[in-house]
Figure 1: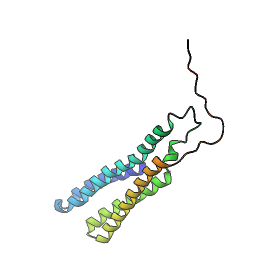
Figure 2: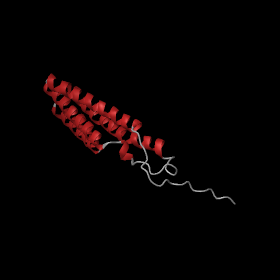
Figure 3: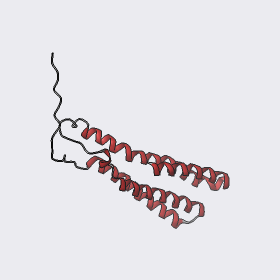
Figure 4: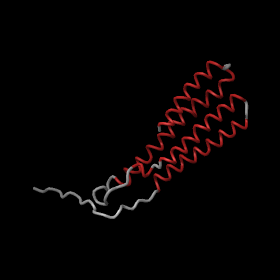
Length: 151
């Protein structure tokens, strides 16, 4: 989440700069992109890549800890390389899209939109990995449930 949080904070600072420096009529589109996409969507999607693997781990492995051996770490359901690649696509997409809108360059804006599409595919892939990644406990001793004490 750190890259997305930083991107969101940079988007807020850039939003303030765009609103102060540019003519109000010209600042509407870049400011909306920076505020809605840069901060809101960026931080939300960044949290999805953390929250979904954690919830999937709890749903899949929390009850099985005592009986089925050692569960995988939560990070196993959230590949770091995928998150970094998705974050890089998000940040580059935001930069290209806003720069293309400010400069009036449709090629840069289209490239930013394509990078955003790749970023969205990365989020969907991260959720799919968290939900569907198979796990087989390694061979070894199994944990035994604690006996219930009876009086």
